[in-house]
Image: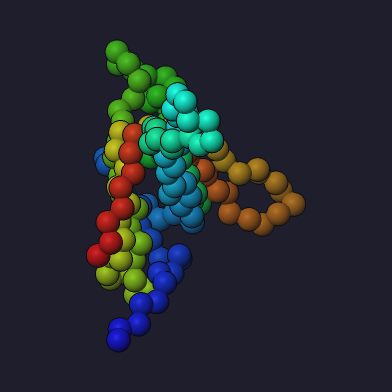
Length: 147
């Protein structure tokens, strides 16, 4: 019998279409939920049917040390578009890697993402911490494949 250990959460890679590769401190929001629609059938008073409703995906939240400007530039394209409409929607992947960083164990892929929020951590002269930028991405679908 082959032993299947759970994957380790510290080894992952994020790729956003058209943005140079970047290393992130954390990734959140890999979650989706399907609504339950309750339907009461006429004449049936002691139970309800549970039907499938719309599926909702949480926003993806990426955090990394602030030092380059690709993510904030993408956000600024949405806030102050230079063309006829908002900035470009982008797809991307989050790959969970083996501890040696050579093998992909699982891949989450999102479609039609756009930056809904960008934030920089508090600047505080009394602390010696790295500035952390946070980017929140709304999207229209998240799928997962395992290697």
